[in-house]
Amino acid sequence: MKRLAIFAVPLVSLVALLSLGAPSAAAASMAAHGAHTSRPVSHHHHIVFFPTLQHWRKMHHNRHPYAGSPNDLMYNGGPVEENPVVYVIFWGPGWSNGSGGVTADGQVVENYFNSMGGTSFENILTQYYDNNANVSNSNSVSGVWVDTSTPPTDQSCGGPTVEDSDIQNEVSNAISANGWPTDGSNATYFVYTPNGDYVNGGGSCSDTAGGFCAYHNWDSSINVAYAAMAYPINSGCNVPQSPNGNLAGDSLANVTSHEQFEAITDPQAGNGWLDSSGQEIGDKCAWDFSAGLTNLNGQSFELQTEYSNASSSCVNSY
Image (tube, helix red, strand yellow):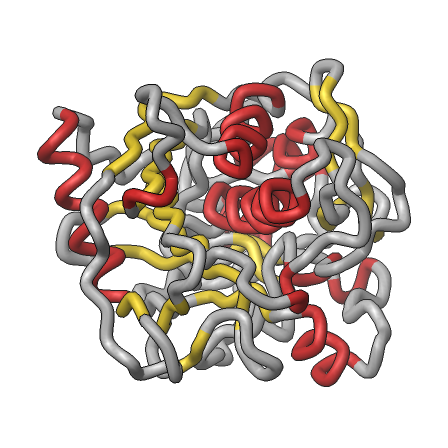
């Protein structure tokens, strides 16, 4: 993903960090991986985009942006989601299957969320930590809501377009309507917009040649992490194969995994785990399917790899 702005900040030595007090479990982990330097906490939050395949190719000249351990992810002093949970919002009448559930494409997304906890894929995240603890190899789906109301749209992206402010409002609406907690510590609230609608994230449009497939951000009005999941209208957000027989659903599952990993390791969008160029765990391996299908508790998904500091490479298990 490409972020709207990158702030260069001076590095802090590991010795200075550990001299502040008795080492915690996270500090011990930091010491064990001393090469992954920490930076001072930044309180700037930015929309963090997952670019379309065409846009990614243009940015990286068809090469993966990682370049070994000198460009590993670094800890920037902010929180991670130590015990990740998700709340899933399918927004629009087109997501309803007419029987109280979600359509087949949405079911692939639900199956991904329900299958990934405790897997070697999710275990990649346990390398990363904050000042309290490492991310745990656990994932729970704490709520799913099919909101059959029609999202408000404008024409800012050349067709029906859902604005970022409306995505944030929908998160607040879902919390209120379902009695969900406002969890700024461990939760990410995923909002899936309707087939046929674009999403405008701060002036950039979804599913266009120079646009994005999804993004995550921090809603400072209610202090939660959220992800805007645009429906894959064009081919720029599609996966190369569909193991679940639903191309849109498999493509959404892939984009979901990218956003989930990044929201867990950088929930406040700017002060978690990033490399020296500002890229997050999923950015460094975007559109890399070289590891083959990913098995999650017996279910197969076409998911991009994620970056491992342990091997300085893109992997789908750890």
